Amino acid sequence: MSAPVLVVNSGSSSIKYQLVDGETLQASTSGLIERVGQSESILTHRHGDERTERTAHIADHAAGLEAVVAAFEEHGTPLADAGLIAVAHRVVHGGERFVQPVVVDDEVEAAIDRLSSLAPLHNPANLEGIRVARKLFPRLPQVAVFDTAFHATVPERAHLYAVPASWREDHGVRRYGFHGTSHAYVSRKAAEMLGRHPKEVNVIVAHLGNGASVTAVERGRSIDTSMGLTPLEGLVMGTRSGDIDPAIVFHMHRSTGASFADLDDALNKESGMLALAGQIDMRVVEAAAEGGDRAAQIALEIYCYRIRKYIGAYIAALGGADAIAFTAGIGENSAEVRAGALGSLTALGVRLDEAANAAGGPVISTPGSPITVMVVPTNEEGEIAAQTTALLRN
Image (cartoon, rainbow, N blue to C red; front, side):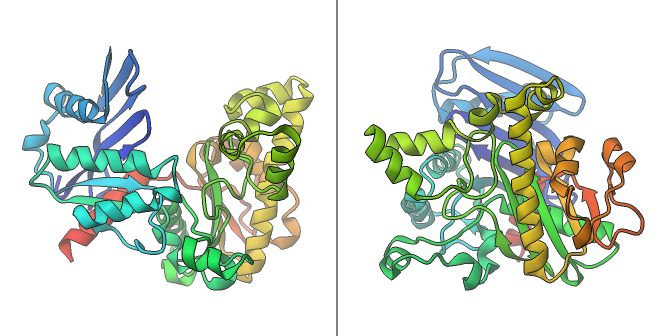
C-alpha cells in the first residue's frame, strides 16, 4: 500500500474499521466490533479472503481499539508494520466550522465536542473513538472527516430555515446534510461512468440504507440535500420518520404528556419502516408485501413515493439532470425500490430498463433515456482515506 490509512467509524456501541490505501481506495482489511460495553461483544475481522469471528467482553472503546490492533497482529499485517500515514475518523456533524477534513488537536477535539448538541446520537461516539486513538497511536496524525462537509456548498436558498434569526445565529439552526462522503464519491463515479468530468454533469444521488438521503449535485457541488439540521429530516428510513409536520411533536407532548426526549427517541428509533411495516430489513418488507401483507405494501409505497418526490424536486432544482445514481444497501440491492422510486418520472426524462434493473445494472436506464440511471456501489471508507491522504500531502 502506498498510502495506508486506518479508517475508524466509532458508534455508541460499535466500531467499524478498514485499512485502506488512500490512493487506490482499495481495502486490504476490514472489521466490525458489535455490542461494545455488553457482556458478549462480537469482533468480525476480514483480511483478504480470510474471515475470523470471536466473542468476548469488550468493555469500552479503548478495549475495542486494542482488540482491533490485536486482530491485525493475529491475522494479516500488524498495524505497527503497515506503514500507516494516519488514522482517519468519520465524524457525523461538523457544523458550519468544519467544511474540510482536519488534523485533530486538543482545540479541534473540543470543537467537535461542542457540536454534540447538533448530533447527540453520533458525535459523542465519534469523539470517543478519536480520543482513544490519539492515546493508542500518539505519533500518527488523527484526521476527522465530516459527513456534513460536502454540503457546505449548499446555497442559502436551500440551507436556511424560515425561523427566528436568533435560532439561526445563536444556535446554528440550518440545513447541514449528511452522508457527504458517500454523495461525494458516488457523484464522481457517476460522472466517470458517463465519461465526463464531475464539473460537467448534474447528478442526483440516492443513498438508501437504514439511514437514507438524496442529494442534488450540480457540477460536482452539493446544492441541496434531503437531511437537515439532523439526520431525521427527509426520506422515510429504517427507524426515522423523515419529513413530518413539526407541530406533531407539540401535539403528542400535549396529548400524551410524553417528554421531548421520549418524542425524540420515538421519531429517531421507533418510526420509519419499523413503525409502518414492523420491519427495518427491506428484504423482509418486500417479501411480506409480495405475500399480501397490506402494512408492508403501503410502507413500501410510502418509502418509494418519498424518494420519487425528492428526485423530481431535484431535477427541477438542477434545471435537469444527467444522471441518477442509486447507492448503499437498499439502493444497490433492491430492484423493486429503484423501480418504485422512478415509477412516474418518465415525463422528466427517466426511461427505466426493467431487465437491466432486475440484473442490478450498473446502468439501468434504456439507451435512449435523457437521464442515465445507474447503480453505483458506495465507498465511504475509501473516500475518507482519499480525503485524509490529500490533506496530509498538500
